[in-house]
Image 1: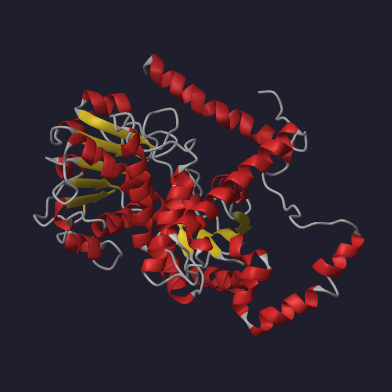
Image 2: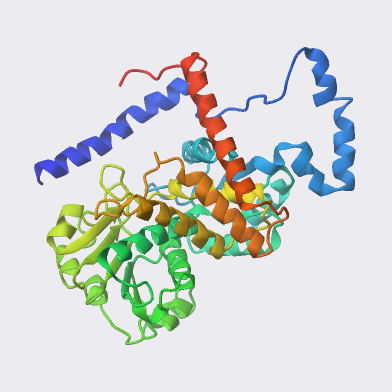
Length: 444
């Protein structure tokens, strides 16, 4: 093991070592705070009984009034059964709670969205669907998180079809959107066209399955794609996948029925997108060496990418992205989900379509392109907070264009609303820290 690798693994383990102490110090990461005036206890006659009854009666007559008289317009439930938590697998709903709280924190800080962790004690997909339907009156949107496959596909599609509010699975749609943004710019940087580029997709879990469909919707030719699972390339020669969600993909892709594994699939490929087993060594240098000139490698597994970036570069890759913040070109769902929900909530969208995800990804890519693409900068960083209102604007406009928005706002109105809400959140957090209402963390 090289010195660089040792340092990287040491750095990664540092966060695991200090995280429990930090979590214990704050006893959670989010809290509910009043946002209305409380001048005296008399004000509870307005906010609670008897005054609140009139607000209830107005909503009874017109359910849409809930978006004006309550915080439903900005509430999102982060729902999980804990069956596929980060790289931890099936650890259950309660053990997954720190992750869902973290998701809620990112929702608030980067999108101004009030998100609530809802961890379920059932793993039955139909019970999960029913639970989400039961809590719908309180929320303007649902974020499904860390559900195992294949039930994650069934749960998402069923709820999207039957719920009157946006339902989104971040492991599917969020990953697909951020990968699309990186793909757009990586191909631009190396001078290749989306419609002509050849793709190798390593891994057929929830992330890459939805990525395939989003790439196709964005203009990638399915005949130029080969997917690889743990048993080899997908193709119509694979009788073992005939009754699975993989079969429709196999029928559309790999027209030559290329058999083999990653290396065979990557032969002559322009871009490899991996969201599979953490490495190192899942993808080997030999797999990258057979790719086309000026190839692109997205090794998105965490905490260790499928191949170390320097190994991919040594094998000939021109642009490399990972899921880690300590390498260039971090492909991170947090770049998109707060903004997509911000835009969807602000126009009261009934759903989040693939086209809305593509609009968000395109805005994200354009921001980076306008700043100047390099091999180490094909996608913005989370610190570039201006990307969030821009994506929210494009997401909301696409929802209006597609007829899935209840509220029609102008381009300027969507942008200014998103910018104001996000900026207020970040200013409030800074003020609370400065005034000591949020304590300084314990020493590392």
